[in-house]
Every structure is written in C-alpha cells, then in structure tokens.
Image (tube, rainbow, N blue to C red):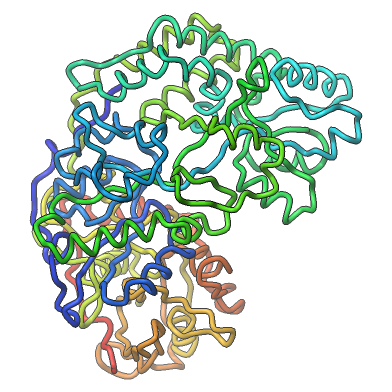
Amino acid sequence: MKKRIIAALLILAVFMGFGGCGISDKNDKVHITMYLWDKSMTKALTPWLEEQFPDIDFTFIVGYNTMDFYTDLNSRGALPDIITCRRFSLNDAAHMSDLLMDLSETNVAGSFYDSYIENNRETGGAIRWLPMCAEVDGYVANADIFEENGIPLPTNYAEFAEACKRFDRLGIRCYVNDYREDYSCMEALQGCAIPELMTMEGTMWRTSYESETADNPVGLDDNVWVKVFESFDRYMKDTMIKPEDVEMSYAVNKSELLEGKAAIMRATASDCAVLRRDNSVNTVMLPYFGETSEENWLLTYPTCQVAVNKDVEQNKAKSDAVMQVLEAMFSEEGQRCTASGGAVLSYNKNVNMEINDVFSQVMDCVNHNRLYMRLASTEMFAVSKNVVQKMITGEYGAKEAYEDFNAQLTRKESSETPEIVTTQQTEYAYEVGEHGSPAASAAANTFRRQWGSDVAIGYSNFIAAPVFSGDYTREQLNRFLANRLVFRSGELTGAELKRLMEWLVNVGEDGANPIRHRNLIPAASGIEYQLTDNGDGTYTLGEITVNGQPLDEGRTYSVMTAGDNDFIESDIYCGCSMPQDLSDKMKVMDDNIYTLFCSAFEGGKQFEAPTDYVTFIR
C-alpha cells in the first residue's frame, strides 16, 4: 500500500507567474507564495505575517493537507516557496527531498529540542521539514464526574482500568473514542503502547520505516509491534469497547461527556480548553497511561510541518526574506498566532508557550518531555483504521491484526493509471491581476456554463491552484477547487444581487472585513464590477454592470455561488454573516459542487476562458 508517485502520470507544465518568481513587479517587493494546509492558518498567522513584513508581497493559498497535492503541484512546475502540511511523515515526503532546502544549519532548526527535530532528519543528515507547535492528544476527563462518583483520577494504567470497571458498574462509560475516524484509530493504537514504541528497538524500527524506498518496503518488526497489538487488545477489553463503537463520532463523544454518560473521551488539549470555556465543565487532560506514572506519555503531532522550495536559493533577496519569515513563524508570537488560542506546546527550546490550565494533571509529562510524536504516514492512517475497526468488531484478534497490518504495509500498489477526464490546452494564472484572477474567472465561467445560471460567483478560498495545461484526472479537478465549498442557488433581483456583492466585498458596520487577502476578491461570471482599493486591506464595491451595461435592479437573475461560508461568516475568520433575506433565497443545494464541476469537463471539454470581471479604482 505504498504511496503513489503521481509525477510520472502528469505532463509537466510551466506555470505563468506563480512560484519561484523572484522580485515582484508590485513596488519591487519580494514575492513569496505560501500554501496553507488549512484555513485555520488564516485566523491570526497570515494577517500577522503581513503586518511583520510590509515589504514582502505574500500570496497565501489554502491548499490540501496531503503530500500528493504538492507532488501534483511540482509536476506542473508550480511548487510554492513555502509549504505547510499536517498529514506528514518522512516516509511520505521522501520523494520530494531533492526539491526542498536543507534547513539543518539554519538558526530555526537549531532552536528545536533534539528529540523532536531528529524525527525529521534524513539518513544523510538533512532536515527539510520543521515541526510547528504541538497539538497534544490524550484523554480529556470530566473531573466533576469523577468527583461526584468518588472515583479518583487515574495516574497509571491499572488505576485507569479500575476506573473503567467502577464506572461501568454505575452505568457510565469511562472512556469513548471516535473510532469512525482514521486518526483516532491510529492514535489509540499507538497511544496505548508508547513506552514500547519509544524503546531503542522501537525508535530504530521507526527510522528504518521512515527511510524505506519503493523497492525496499519496511513492514512491522516482530517484537515491538507484536506487543503494540497485544497492548491494544488489552486496552479494548479494559475500556469495555463495543462493536458499534466503529461508528462513534466526536460529536456523540462530546455530548456523552457533557451529559455525564461518559467520564473520558479521546481529544486534544485545545478541545479540552474549548469544552471548559464554552460549557463550564471542569475538563482536564490525562495522559496515555503506562504501567507506572513515570511511563505516562502525551501523544503529540505538529500543528503543521513547514518546508521551503529549493528554488528559493537561486535568488538571495527571496532566500533572505523566506528565512526571516521562518524565524518569525517559529518565534513565540508566531507560534501563538499559528495556534490561534489553542492549548498547545512548543518543540522549541527558546519558546515559552503559556501552559493552559487543562494541563494540570499532565505537567509531569510536560516537564520531562514525555511527548511522543505520532507516526503519521498516509498509509498509517488508512491501515490503522482498517485493522483497528476489525479488532473492535471482533473479526481480528491481536495476532490476526498484526499480520494483516504488516501485509498491508508491504503490499505493492496497483500500477493502474487514473482515467484522464480532460486535457487542458491553456493555462491561467492564480494571482489577482488588473482585472481579477484568471484561474478563478475560468472556474466561475465554467460553473456558469455547467449550471446554466445568469450569474456565478466564487468567493472566499474558492480555488486551490492555477489552471494548468495538460491532463486532468477527476481527483485533480476536485483538488483544483478548495475544500469544503458550499453550493447555493437562487433567484435574485438586481438590487438583491448588488447587496450580495456588498456582503462579499464591503467592510461591515462592525468593522468585519470579508476580503482578508487580495486573492480572496470574489470571482464573478455574468457580471462585472468596480472595486475601490482603500489602501488598508479593505475594499469598497462600485458600479456593477452586465455585459458593460448598468445592472437592472428590477430584473430577476438566476444566481449560483460557491464558497466556504464558514470562512466568511464565522467570527474567528471574517465574521460577515450573509443577510438573512438573501440566505433565505440562496438555498444550499444538495448537488455535490465537485461532481458538478467535474461533469463540466466530460468529453474533454476545456475550462471556459477568463473574462475581466473586476476593475480596480484607486
């Protein structure tokens, strides 16, 4: 089940004006393109970076949290300057090594605790990925439920197992986990046996696994991992796991914890802090328990991993600027911005993150750096879910689970070539130019063609890449669009359409700004509009036209929109709620926006050509 090497399946193309472009034409600023693993990085980090570096012209793009996505970008000639990814392992990223800078001699790399940075060191000594502050995963306990029932908070595995029995006799589940998710299965499997995985034998196996090649796959060893599955088998029995738990969700776990039906749930320290803040519940973190309290561990994973395109080294001005950005990101304030108020810990020696109260029961783990960094290759997620769920349903015991897990790790992948949906003849740049983003315009025009509406509007983090020339598979078309888009459709008068555009452009009365970065300017198809750049990161909507003629406010138009409504409306992002009367008219569609988009290319059809949808007034 080894990682696919997509590059061999794609046609290389040079992207106009995207990555590796040295000095920007805009006021001779250094231009840096940075891909974000998730929109959460836009809460505080990206605005803060723009404030810290006014002489850098940033393009921030919310991409996809996978190495395959970056492999695809590189094969198209568009690897960004700075890369971030959360679902990461050296195993997954090995094929990109020659494309990335060696950061081992930088000041940033030198600021890490050795035990954490060594997880990212290649066999040749290079370090190409730096781990951002640590999300902490473990047990979130409702301490009030323990106190109400006279059960002490456990401090080791035997006490944990005893607490499970006592709660069971009271009709309360001691521990619940959202086993429907791949990451929860993986973390439960590793978490229950961290002392084994952190032995010399375990760390040597991990180094070997992370260094495997396509021709030399590394399976599980027959000592440490046998004990891991035996530990998980015991753990399942002690937590009174049920076959139906394979469908358990985080939302259900949360409800049971808050309602007193469960005493402990698997979650992160950030989750723990939110539960305490929003529900006035005395939640605290508990560790993954060892046989003694000295063998307790917290499972951690970086908020994201950060790497730099090797091409940056070709331009000293850009290279110097990127290093300054990295140093800022890994400073105390930079990591706080990345965490956006979450309860996290730092892997860096010189960064003193404020310890949240939720860590009160696990300070021994924190103080002694018993912070295990999860092994999180792409195949580890998938295989863990497959095998752990079979253990939960009773299909596998520890021996069968070990054997199947090992077989899946070493199984050769199918060489089947993905079906090509279309071969695009023309490429269009991502970045917003004089009349908008050509790529975003091409997408909006394509949606309007396919849906048959008078007007199509793409907003927020709408697209995740430029339009490349060359072959597109269905997966690549899906990943051209950003993640979690909401598709709406309705009939609006010209006056209502103008108000819809004002919602997407103008600063609200409370100061909320729907355009946090220039590349989030709405892409329109079927209409054109003028936009005043206020010079302070805000914009004001001007005249709207249809084919060059003024918008008829009394006419009715069929309108479709595609965007991330959570990004626009949530207080932690833009905080601009859609006016209720417009929301009532613009209904969320059951049609899958990604399926609709892919269907626009059946039979080899092309992206619609871009049009000039915006004119800037200064």
